[in-house]
Image 1 (cartoon, rainbow, N blue to C red):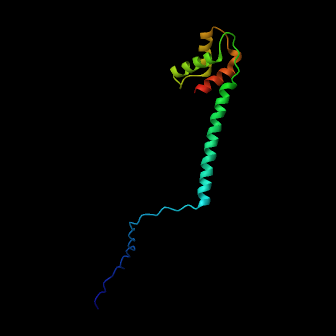
Image 2: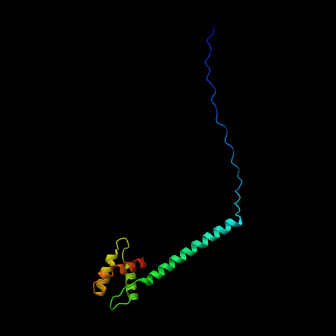
Image 3: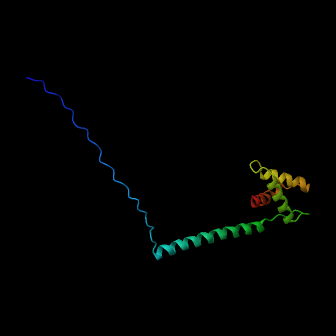
Length: 123
């Protein structure tokens, strides 16, 4: 008898990948209801932004600061110059208040909230 040879099973090869066609995708057409909804959403967003701006403007006028001998506009300009010339990473409202106290030579402790509002306006 002749010895039989051992055979190894054939390896399976993965199926070939399909070639991707080079066709361009066509844009999806929006129907009128979708267009109206998108337009309404954009209009609502604009209105919200405008209202936010109006709120900020009204907040500017809402600051009630009654310091004898100084007008609110002058104080607002001084706060603006302090904030613009300082390092904003290290600047605090207390530091601004102390600088204003030095400038006015008066104690502004009772006006902390109003000064905070002025500083936040500028920032």
